[in-house]
Length: 248
Image (cartoon, rainbow, N blue to C red):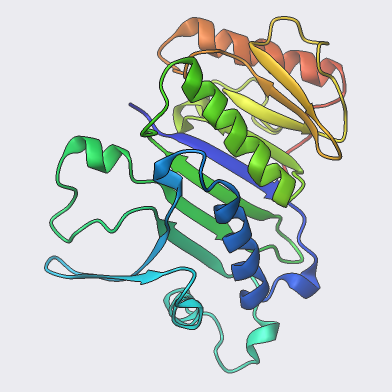
């Protein structure tokens, strides 16, 4: 099963792009999905990994160690005040995977990867969840869980654009220089609920935009009807003037 990448792009005030502020935003985004599914309830930062040993830090409890480790790992300038450092990226896993790897395939598939790259003067902030499998949701319930995930993080940081789809969809998108849809997307600042009758689901999120879902079942690029539905959605959004060009 190919992972679904839920990706949120948002503006971040440059005065709130220091490591401490980015970390706080990251924590808020991660915490917003707590309770949707057990695979989203805990987060651990990988501080060290060798063939024989891995060391994880707990996100809520070990902030200072995590920020220091991230600055060192990214080789950011440690000679300037921390508040002036921009562009930091944080990563976390939802389980502590041992050095020898997950106990079985199912355990590995239920390990979620979270990351946030802070915004700079030349780059939007980018939050991402890589989710292969949920624990308690299948079929239509899986779609509903993913809509809840998209809604939760959109209510923390208003999207410039949000999409949820497998990475393999990138070669199928209609307009490579524009944003894409895939399985789900949040079209910001407008209420277009009910205007695209071929969608599987849509919902207006007050003060955010419209959440749209192209297929009821999990999006799969090996199914031509899924790809065609997303491509139709992208083409229609462009005609409506609602498919923005990509920004860095």
